[in-house]
Image 1 (cartoon, rainbow, N blue to C red):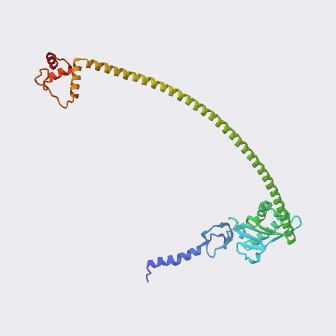
Image 2: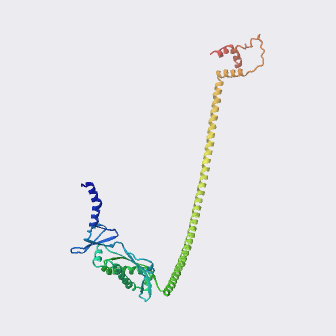
Length: 368
């Protein structure tokens, strides 16, 4: 029977390849560090840590171990009974120790540590895989009790003292944890408590200290207020002095400018009077000269008029004016009298009006 080649390919891809991949590879998760052991031949733990991903792992030939990559938390707390330990978290009762001044104290603390890459295979090879957490805990407990006991009750109460002491403890702790191939990252002291009697005395002492600090602060405040008041008074005095100086300066300048304004006003009035007098004098002179010119023109006009009127033409003009102004309601002339001029004889009438009295003269007057 012939099996189609396509079915063979599908069978290989669906069944054979996954089984072969699972048989010859091993997957290490991102939160784990892989350690591989050879079960045949020379055997033993390989001196290498395997990072996250797929690695060669032949089923039946290799054996794999996994250690947590995450940071481990070791808690010492008064309420540790209500917290369950996990692969990377361990809860223990709070630390109880005696201080340098022979006083008992209870400390809540947390220590974080991790397995550096390259150390996991040592833990497996030396048989610490299952109990390295307990070994680390006992070492941490011993170091913390030994080192924190060097502090007095007063020193434990100071935050900076605790921080300085933790900074000194961390290298010591790492020196001892190196036997288990882990590295401590930090030591955190969360709280400190003393016996009730001492706590009461401590609170009373702290209250007195706070009161003393408050009194000191109030004293400083009072001193500061006194200094401030003194400064304010000095400022007020300086301000008044400055205001007085400015007022004096303003009055002096105002008086000086008033004098200047008065001088300028007086000079302006004098100048105005001088200019006005000169203008009036000039006006009188100009008016007199103008009147003189008018009188001269009038005299010249009269002289020229008289000259014109004294001439023959002037006589004719005056005669014409007289004739034009004559208004006779009625005239009775004796036509038989030879001396009576004929009204229509203008030459004779003109001669009569201008007083020539002779026909020859009238003829000359009528001549062009």
